[in-house]
Image 1 (cartoon, helix red, strand yellow):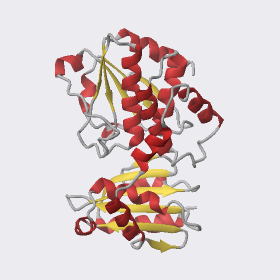
Image 2 (tube, helix red, strand yellow):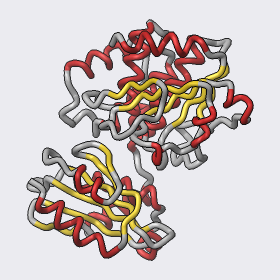
Image 3 (cartoon, helix red, strand yellow):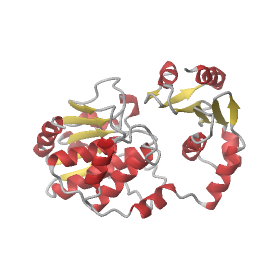
Image 4 (cartoon, one colour):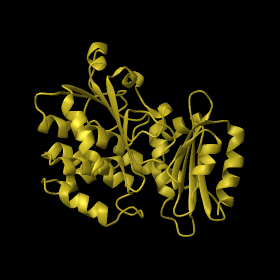
Length: 309
């Protein structure tokens, strides 16, 4: 992609770079952020490279601690935002202090955040776009960067099962695989469940409500405690509804500490992002979310999900 050459020139101008991701981070957010960090460290050893965000890492065996950066450093740095669709989704708004900024994202455009933006909705993930930046820039890809980027691509494509798994992605993966990756190790670390979580997931299946070609699960805070789940683990369980014959659309409603509900919406083929947008959310056509709704909104959202055609 020719536009990446302009991005490369901007990156090379700065001695300090701070990389940001979105709130409630998934593996694509972490993978693109930390993958890019290790690419830059490997190819520009004289630069100071930082990855920032809240310490809400749920898999410390695979991921790594975030960096702490002082304000003076930030003010003299280039900010790179990855996997972020809008300003409300940026986990740390100190990027506004940086001298210049770049965004690398695969969500549908909603607003301009940075001085320079790579937004490509045909890409499977932000991690794929980082791989393409590396490819266009002729960067060395070290093992750590490759593992993070593979994890981001694998999880955002639901283990290579969505329609954005195409010739372009396979070519990017072939380039990524030029570096030795222990994919078995990575897959075990990001997909394996503890015995307790596996047992809980089995119980959650019994909470699924089926309504025509739609399915959904609702968790209030009391149920989260009873099931031994935290907010993030409950949200991630939306995908257990993804392989049920006859179910084309599904949702997870998880109550937060303020009494509101966070919503994850998914669909195999029918766009559902417009439902999220109606409640101030957004995302991809087939995978969207809403940060906060009232309990009374759940019935209407389920109705819209069921009626989506």
